Image (cartoon, rainbow, N blue to C red; front, side):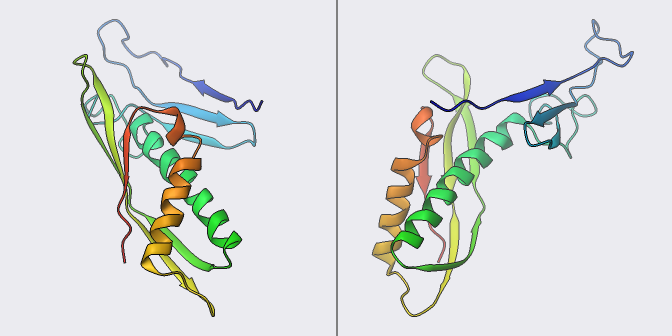
Length: 154
């Protein structure tokens, strides 16, 4: 069994906490030493209490689904002998109320654009199959209730 860690750090820094006038800016720290500036989303907590430039949990959720899908796509393409030169995904997550009336990330649309080269390039049907296999193998996709749709860009 694998285990993954992240350390989340926030500090008040003298702000008026009880009156709700505190920054939601914080830091994510990962075991490799990376420190990521994070914040609540400005769509959830208005500026200036949030920091638009920082990564928010909703963006990170969408990015983790996209990244996981891409990593499986690259591995499967390589196993099938296809040379991938570039992979770009402009993924979008959509929040809405779920059946219990709570806000949730209800849908994530992956829009990968993949550039291949070499003597053997996959057909559209083969690319679709690689995306389907990637979705089925993605650990993150297998862990969430969110509807995940892949709309390859050609």
